[in-house]
Length: 247
Image (cartoon, rainbow, N blue to C red; front, side, top):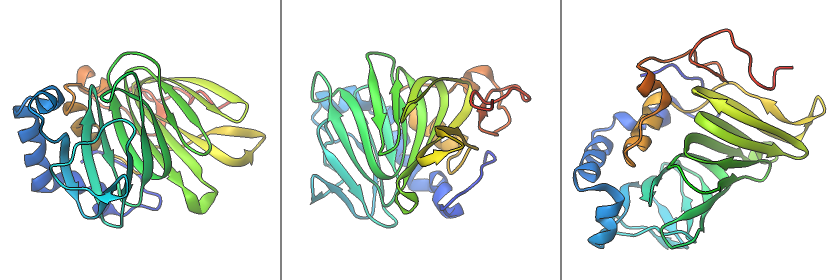
């Protein structure tokens, strides 16, 4: 398992991927043809469901179909993995979010996260966003981890695991170009005069991101390169390069 740091998450939660059921579900999803086949055959697009998960206020079932415009809530010890179009999502426990509608029911224009944590991988294409109470990320084909901390005034954590992302928080703006986990805080209150600050890599693993990427036939930048970098939050495969906000 790749190196990782934790803040407010248990080791067991980060090791969820090693449960046999998750791996079996992912293999079955891929073998069955992924989202395109599920949609064509009118099957569920839920890859894995654990515990108490609510879809638009109703208890989600393994045969539920998530579409854009839906609201999702996960309870303690609960999670859900699903795919819509060319994007895939792992929603962790104690999360509240809305999957906002794009041009069709099967196109996501935005992920609006009110609390909790989500790993998401997005195919290349039109402008799409992740929105939290304290930051906005414009994305075009990337893998990211987002977490909102309600107990810290909805301070938000965002990791551009790979790809290019346009981030904004308050009046601060930055273009993040990452090959290996470039991380940021969207602050609830200014820190050193900034609303967007550098962060370490927290609360997610390489394997988790790789798992979600594989659901939509993608590979991470480090898989393509055949090597991993130093997981320090700076975002590079080669060590020693500064974070874009370390000035």
